[in-house]
Image 1 (cartoon, rainbow, N blue to C red):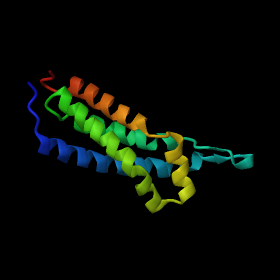
Image 2 (cartoon, rainbow, N blue to C red):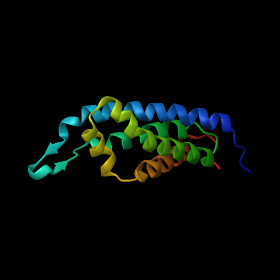
Image 3 (cartoon, rainbow, N blue to C red):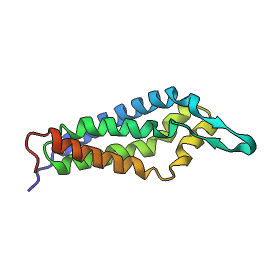
Length: 134
């Protein structure tokens, strides 16, 4: 039977969300020069589309490896990915123009890649680095 510590899960998820957003913003800013605008309004997002994915992967790996069991790690990864995809458009709109926000948030659609990346990476890193995985 899995013993959940809800307080620890929420604190880890919120800290992971903050780390994910900060890393995503930094990588987004660094890769903004790779966006290309072609004729007739066609554009290529360059490497900016992977900025928040990398942020979620790093945060989920960090906080997923610290959890006691695989289920808790999966929950932390899910919450980090879900909250990041819900908040990333708002955070980007604080720093960048609306077209820039549309480029990054419109490319992936519903942002399910962030949720999948968060869960999978958190579980894998928990299996590798946890002392006692169930």
